[in-house]
Length: 241
Image 1 (cartoon, rainbow, N blue to C red):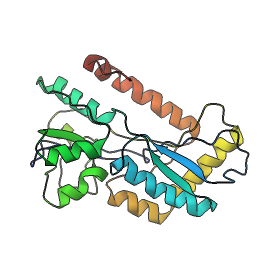
Image 2: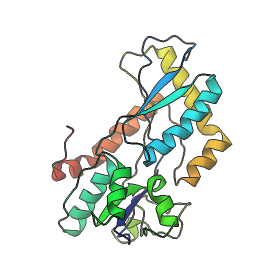
Image 3: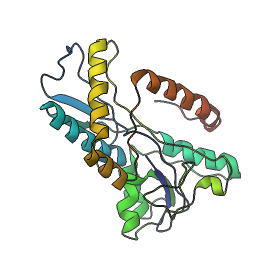
Image 4: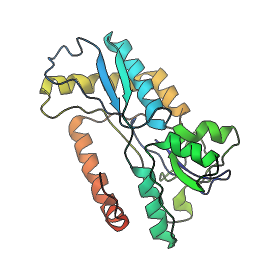
């Protein structure tokens, strides 16, 4: 998923893109290999209207069609994630001081940006792209290592600051102790959903790239990302509350 850095009515820069949709599911423990046998509560840890919410609803629609069971999205905002880290990395790289204003998701932050309550923000392209296309904000760069195919006119941050790269990603997960057969079933269904042309088109239209990884590969990727971002997190003083 690609992030965009936006200031008031002009954007200062934009943040960058990555794999899979940021989604989290819960409420599915103790199921059998024939899961799902009933509707699934799909927990999105961000408020409605943001990038994670948009992508979650796209993937849940496909999962519902594949299984014949409803995947119901519930929003439980919110978590401070890569938008915060993008700003902290920028502060560290160019030696400026910016006041971090915590929000419970990209949607309320974007509303304050449009209202002139904040000067700039990092956001996911799916959340901000409509406002960019409407000319209400201006995106200046992406933080992915390569330019986004959705907004190819935007340079990467690394074109100005070498090696500046942060990508946003997410995956499907559930409570600890899920039966292995259920984990594999959820992984298989997600792979099928992400492979559908309708999902690929919808994701790309939102500035995101669908990419499936096995459960083991996802764990390895997460550990790699944590190692890479640990110095930024430590220097910023950010913590989970």
